[in-house]
Length: 258
Image (tube, rainbow, N blue to C red; front, top):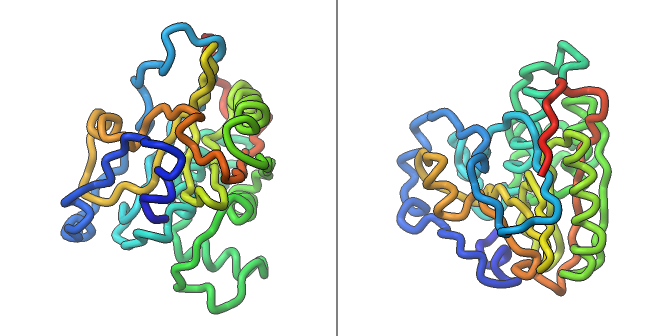
């Protein structure tokens, strides 16, 4: 949603695009999306106690990346597309789903109407969607159920509930996760979690970038893929997690230990 929604819990240090956000020329130019935009980032703590990361390739979807200008309302759709790109590349129990491209925004809206989650006027609208809709969409297109986790408020509950849920999710070889809330209602992709003696950090893949092609280093420098301390989140907001359940459906990967 609006950039202020994401920063209300503290200064996240994100560059929101500046002049690029006002230049729509890039929409006419199709470019390949970045894969594994977070890879190569250093850990946020010198002596982490526990770190778990998503394994496997995914594409970084963001505002306007496919030619549709969805600034201000499309972050949930873009996070779903990022998760779907991981499923298409890494779920191999069903040949029909292997390398299946992520659904486009109109296809996501049509699926939600077909499932009778949304009324017919939803088609072509700029209505937001969140973690619940993400669970429906990923089940519809990829036959993958999702676990929804509600975190009642702020840093204490995030540390107590969300961090452990995410550690367990990624230790099972889990897909990138989705996070959203009420006061902090900007959708975020999560591809890792790090716990240190001083607190925990989430590795965020942020869909709010709008502009031309980014190199991975630039995306990381500008904060579109970055570790965020739990202290930077909105302490008065509740949060929801959408965790795709891919046990037994993914390619075998070499486990990483930290």
